Amino acid sequence: MSKIIESLQNLSVENDKKSNKQVNGKTCRKKELILSMEESVSSEENYILSVCGTQSESEFRIGAALSDYSCVVYSVGQFLNRILTLNQSQAPVVGIKFSSTSRNILYIATNDGHITACDMRAKGKVVAEFEDSTEGGKTKPLASFDISSDEKLIAGGTEHIGGDAFILFWDIRHTNSKIKSKNNLLGGYWESHMDDITYLTFHPTKRDVLASGSTDGLINVFDLTQSSEDLALTYSLNTESSVDRIGWLTDQSLWCTTHTHALQLWNCEDASAYATFERDNLSLSQNDDSDSCYLVRVHNTSVFGQPFLLAGCSTLKGEKLRCLSITNNQLETCYEIVGNKQIVRDSWLHEKSGRLVTVGEGGIINIWLQAELTPTEQNLNHELLTKIGTGKDRDRHHRIKPY
Image (tube, rainbow, N blue to C red; front, side):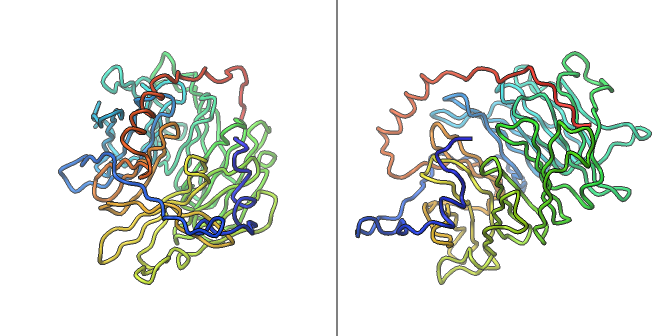
């Protein structure tokens, strides 16, 4: 991971520098993100539950999963254009993610136990399918999934069923020619969690490391090169809450948001979180009601200067949305987002252009830009992006054995 930010712990919680409200004795104008593009995805009353995107192109793509089980794909350049609508899902979508090597392959995980790879070049045709049908043909209901950084392995987290919650593993390469291949399930773990596995995230650079979060309150970190689940379980962190989302900050640290809208920051080797911010800490003005405040996710990026937490608050004056940094053990607004109309459920950031994508309960896709970028600067930025080529494929020579 980039050394731009060592971790939120070093950057902010132990930071004794001046607040970004004042630099060299001068008060800084509060920064803003302004609306660049907006699209109402559906005329029906559908939520947009999650969003993902491709990082490698100037004219990048985003995918969004809706509450009516459908998914939509857009191309984002100077305009926002719908490419495709996928309606083949027969159950709620629990995760959506583009291939790291091709902008044309979109993976969709659904609650009925299926993960499909759809090809945008063939109008969304399913080119690979992953499921666990080892127990009499009955699939396990999924609650989460992720793909390893080298795109060799898929992990799926299940709901609590029959006394167990499973992390299942599939080899992506075994379905290149057969959609209904039954030999692609490598195995699974089922002893480390006691309730629904709500989130899975592979380490961004260590392809053998997987972190899982569950409503049982645990964050577990696994080394998938080990021969058994007991040996693979490297760390088990007790949040004493119900885990909603998790993500990596550095090689050894994680962020976690809970279903009670708290943010926790963890070093894997510690027995407790090194920083915790409860829902009350999200009330940054006298007009904010803490019960109406919510967390979206942490973006561990330097695009806006430092990692930030995206959070919202429903008020009588409308739907507030802002980017929060951590300074001197406090949450502070680093960017106000102007013009948000909905409760936001998920977000994604295109790092090369600095465009933040948000989706939510109004069924709207919003794309935000920094207000200090003038139209001329935005055009220059776009022209620069068109000259940036795609990166080479990642190393494909290491075989993972998580069983």
